Length: 216
Image 1: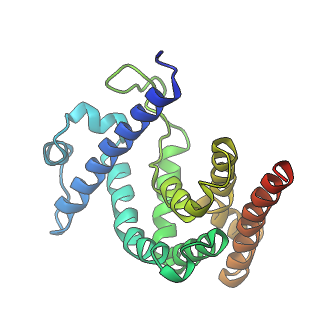
Image 2: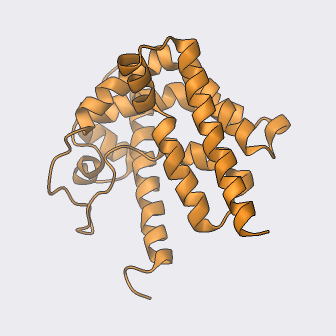
Image 3: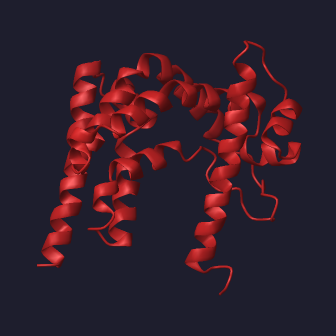
């Protein structure tokens, strides 16, 4: 097994996600009392080094914005995606995810704009503890939610088809799509939700249709 083996790469990615999540959760806990924690305090609470925190978050502001956005969105999203009425319907689950995110966008989108400004020009040469590139400068929260929403398709689509669908949905579900629709298209919230929902449903239905066409 080489370092490029998919299983080993998947294990490293899972570990990175766990480490990042531990740092964010520590920041949320320490911020709950209304006092801004320091990087050293967050590192100690997450049981990681100060250097490790900076591998995932280039600044304290970046970390605190990410933590605040997660604390705002995660509970309602998790509730929406565990609704038994849509357990087997991937398109309906993606719709529910979109509706929930947009419902909370008055509070979360300003955070998103700030976070995008902090990550659009990431520092060069930053590597993880293993000497590897630290990867995406934004957290995996959106990917995890999209994968959870599309879970009913995981056993139907091939691994590559599933990954491509998640990548495509990443383009149309999230702060970047909202900003484009508001700032470039000038849409109001109702039209924005209609456009995002339509695009996401089209991607899900196309993935299913293409799979069925290739596997008659």
